[in-house]
Image (cartoon, rainbow, N blue to C red; front, side, top):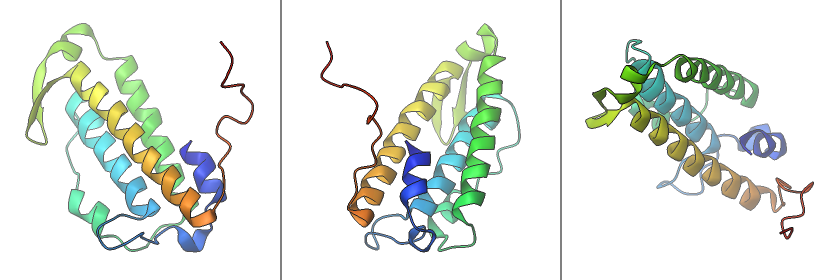
Length: 145
């Protein structure tokens, strides 16, 4: 979903915000990466937590669509590897991340829900900007039983 939205989004619109209370697609991509690195890489994988959350929202440029997408893809691939190799004790152990006490499985569920939420925001904003259907399900009959 996110990739298709980025394909349709002009480079010049990457950092455009709907209003000052909302974030650009660029901010949301930085935020998705930061959240995943904090919860999965650091929380589940034991890597250092180097997240600078406020910077994700303060950014007004500095990266291209290609750079942001490549960084997010790499982060997702690394997170999948961490999850794939997590053993049962690590998935069940409760730890504190961002002030919340969650099991390893809870960290994974948080990231999945969080990713879905913000990719929906990205899709909505790109559809608004481009006045276009992104065609996510163009190849499917969604009325099939």
